[in-house]
Length: 392
Image (cartoon, rainbow, N blue to C red):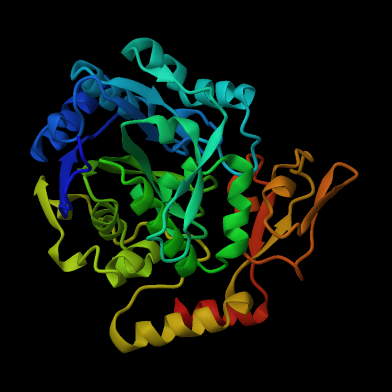
């Protein structure tokens, strides 16, 4: 089966909680509205089910894709006769090892999902180089082996705000196909959110997932993707096009889609016209939250000339405006995740505590993203606070 043709249709289906019956019904209805699972996979195919694992957290924290949603998609695929493998590479502060995968799968609830649905969990920590000469910014990617060997990829992402990319949903989730400790290289190469977004579009175009399902039953607002707060959205999204699905998600959480680097890049390349994105199912307006709390790094809102001027100022003086990470000494346990993830080696561990060299720091917030102890705090200097007040 070839990749699904481009279709900017996104299914929107109400789902009020994570009860098995309600989630299964919502996922089946969403995919049915798109033409059914047979449109996306054939019996006998090996399908990689790619959740947002990050580093494995309990489902109630809303950091990872909820296991009920992963299970619903896995059941649908296995009933269709597909061989399902659940796999991801944890975040860049985590060594990509079998032991860490087992721990992450268990904490996120995916070990139980595999047992209940008959899906396999991936423990192969190998990777392969995949050539992509058509890429605008990257011509080849190192990709985890289960993704390379799969006949099809189905992405099951989590709706969250994000300190670096503003939002993480369908497109950003595919970054997990990059082996864990290879990820900082990309943060080093692509140091602003729009350059990073162009890379993400290359990655998605290279791997071409066939189906996107977004767990937006309970999302994360504030300083996501890990340190934010859960907030009910009450919906499952599904579609074949990553940028179209993210366009709908951005609107639900009160963001202009073109503020998101990956959506802007896909639009600039002619892969998407946000104005042509069509929804089916339930009315998206019933799930839209203009007051969804944005990350503290966020500068957006407004429209027209003022918005363009504002964003230009932020990009020009981004280092001054951007919050600076700092270590909360009483919370730091010296686990070294931040040290391993930092793409510019700005973090060192001394006497069991992290220290950040702000002169080297590029404000990518990888340290904040990976710290499970909430030991990385963000703050702005005086000029940054003045700019933040102006933009707010």
